[in-house]
Length: 274
Ligand SMILES: Nc1ncnc2c1ncn2[C@@H]1O[C@H](COP(=O)(O)OP(=O)(O)OP(=O)(O)O)[C@@H](O)[C@H]1O
Ligand SMILES: [Mg+2]
Image: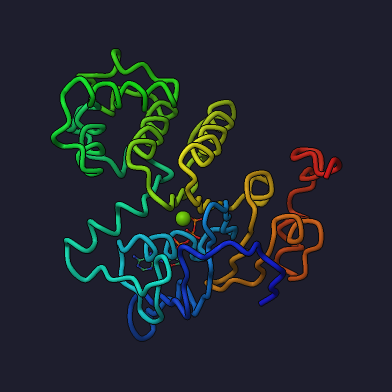
C-alpha cells in the first residue's frame, strides 16, 4: 500500500485488518481483504474504486449492518462494541449513513413528519414541547430547501429522488452524528440536483463539524470534495493519502489508471488552479 502523509487530527474511526468473506468453499468471495484505515475528525474522506471493489461492503461493516469476518473497528479510540441492540442504538447516534437509493432504504409507510420526529426523539428530544419540535423540523427542512409546511402528512414516495435525498440530509441535520457515511448519494439524481446535494453535505459538515466518508467510483468527485482519498481495488486499499497527493502525484498503477480513465478530470474539477 502506498501511504502519503495525512492530517494530524485524531482518528474518530479506525480499522485494523478488517476483512469480509462471503460464502464458503468454491463460492467464497473475499469482498474486503485485511484493510487498515484511520478516518480523522472533521475530515472528508473518499473511498474510490470500481464496481465490486468492496466499497459498500466496507461501509456496511462500519455501520454494523453486517459482521466483520476478521479484524477490528475502533470508534473514537475504543474497540467498537455493538453486541447488544442497545449498544448498536448508541453507536448509531454517532454514525449515520445516506445511500444511493433512499427509497430502497427507508420505511415508505412513515409520513415525513414522523421520519423527522424519530430523529428528534433519537437525540433525546422526546419530551420537548410540540412547538419546539416543529421549530426544529422547520429548521432542518429549510436547511435543505424543503418547505416543512408542505411536507407534513406526505409520504416519502410522494417526493422526487432529489427531494428524498434532501430529506435524508435533513435527518442528518437533526441527528448530528459524528460521522456520516455517504454511499454514492448522488448517482441516481440529475447533475443539477447532484451539485446541490454535494453543496448541502459540505455545508452540513461545516455546520455540525462531522466527518464525512464518501463512497464513490468517481475519482473526479473524490478530488473535488475530499481531504483524504482511499483507493480500493479488489477489496484492498492500494493507495491512501491527501487528495492533492493522490490525484496530482499518484503512485499505484491502479490509481494512475483510474485517473487516466477520466480524461477531463483537469478541466472538470479545475485542477489547473491548484
Ligand atoms: N451479500 C453478499 N453475498 C455474497 N457476495 C457479496 C455480497 N455482497 C457483496 N458481495 C460481493 O462482494 C464484492 C464487493 O461488493 P460491493 O457491493 O462491496 O462492491 P462495491 O464496490 O460497492 O460495488 P458498486 O460500485 O457496484 O456498488 C462483490 O464481488 C460482490 O459480488
Ligand atoms: Mg456499492
